[in-house]
Image 1 (cartoon, rainbow, N blue to C red):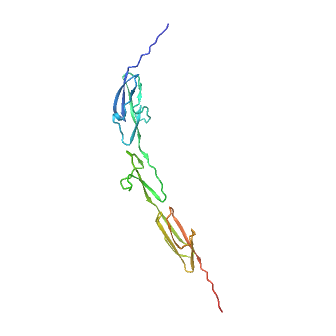
Image 2 (image 1 turned 180 degrees about the vertical axis):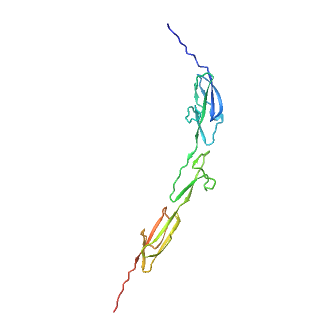
Length: 219
C-alpha cells in the first residue's frame, strides 16, 4: 500500500508585528507568511530618546541583543496564522567617560563647555553629548614648599614657604660672624639666588666655612 502525504501550504497566512519602545506599543504592521516585507523604521514612528542612539529591534523585552536592524527586509517572523510578533527597541547610550588629562604643575579640575571654565558650565565625568561640542579643561595651579635649613656656620636663611608652580623664588643665607658662606647643598655657590619653582618640594641646606686668619708676630 502506498500512502501519499500532502504538506499544507502556509503561504498567505497573515500575522501582526508589534513595535514596542520599552513597555509602550508604538505601532503595528501586518505581514503575510512567505512574503518579504520591510520593518518599520524608528523615524517613521518618531522614535527618539535623548542621549541614546537607536540600534535596532530585539525579540525579547529588555534585551540589548539586536535581532533586526532598522528598516530591515524580513520574511516569516512567524508561520502562525493570525499570530503576532513583538519587537522591542534597542537603545545605545551616547554617554562617554571623559578622560582625565595630566599637566605638570597643575591639578585637573574638570571639563567645561566654555573656554573661561565658568561656574555652572562644568559637565559630568560621564557626559552625554547631544550635538558637536568643544570641551575645555580647567587647571588649578599647584603649590609646592621650599624648606631652607641653617647648616654649619649659617646664621639665617630667607625664602622658606609655599610657592606656585613655575613662579620665581628668591632665597638667601647669611653666615655667622667668623664664617663665610660656602654653598647650598645643590652646589650653588651664590648665597642669594633666584629659581623657578619646580613641580616638587625643594629642600635646601646652606653651609659655611670657618674663616682662618694668619697671625704675624713682630718682635
